[in-house]
Image 1: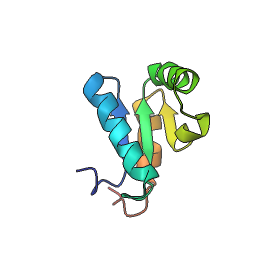
Image 2: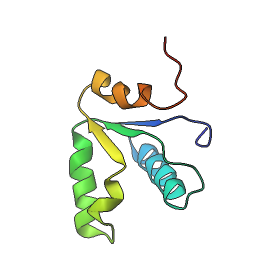
Image 3: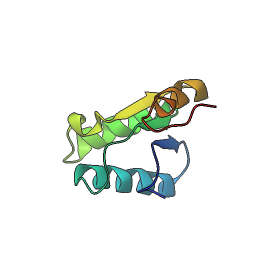
Length: 88
């Protein structure tokens, strides 16, 4: 599913979600998959990303591709604008 998605939406869940987000980002960094919209829905992601950047060998720039959204409509907007997305 990762290689066919036109974009990605991360919800506030558990360790599996964190693993999936890390996997997608690794594949994008190594150019195995092309850059695509990547949205994390929940205000809690900001704190986690900040902690990762502060405590691990991760640069804040590594998160530039991510968009943070507080509401579902805010999260869907960049995904809906992705090239190749069919309009309903």
